[in-house]
Amino acid sequence: MADQNAPARTPHRPRSEASRRAILNASLDLCADQGYGPVTVEAIAARAGVSKKTIYRWWPSKGAVVLEALDDAANPAADFPDSGDLRTDLITQMDGLVRGLLSDRRFGQAFVGLIADTQHDPQLARDTVDDLFRPRIEDAHRRLAKARDAGQIRRDADPALVIELLYAPLYYRLLLHQGELQSADELRVLVDHVLRSVAPEPDAVPAAPDR
Image (cartoon, rainbow, N blue to C red):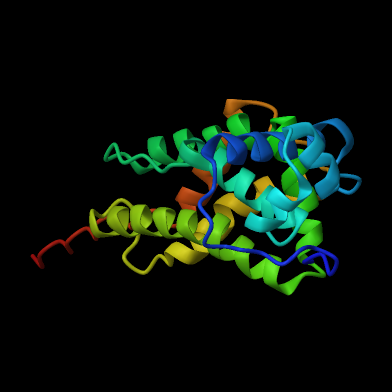
C-alpha cells in the first residue's frame, strides 16, 4: 500500500534513467537477497545510491517500484513469437517465461512477494493486472485467435480459457511452492495436453453412396 508517511510526489518531474535503472535493479537484488517482505524503500534507496525522496517522487510504494522492475524484466523475455506454428510458439514463449523469469531468483522472489502484497493493496492489484498481466494476456489471446482462424485449434475454442489452462500450472507451482517444471519435456507435455483439448476435429468422412 502507499506509504502514508511518504513525501508528496511530483510526478511531472523528469526521471533520470540512470537513477531509475539503479532503483529497479536494487529492488530486485534486495528481493533475491532477503525476500520481498523485509525490503523497504529506505533499503532500496541505499542500495541504489539515491535518496528516499527520489523514490517517493516517482513511485507511491515499494510495491510500485517492484512492479515496474518486474514489468521491465519481463520484456522481452515474455514476448510472444509468431512463427506460424502455434505449438512451437507456445513452447518457446513459456520456456522463456519459466527459464528466463520465474525460475530466476531475482524475478521469482519479487514476483511472489508482489502477488502477496496485492491481496491487501487494491491499487497495487489493479496496477499489477494492468501493467504486468493484461498486455501479455492480450498478446497470447491474439496469437491463439490467429491460430483459431488458421484452423490450428477448434473454431469454438475460447482463447481466454486456453490461456488459463496453459499458464495456471506455472503460477500454481511457483506461488504454492510446488516446484518449477523440471525439464523442457515437461513443458512440452503440458502444451500438448492443452492443445489436444482444442484440436480441430478431423473432417467428416463422406457417407458411402447407396448401391
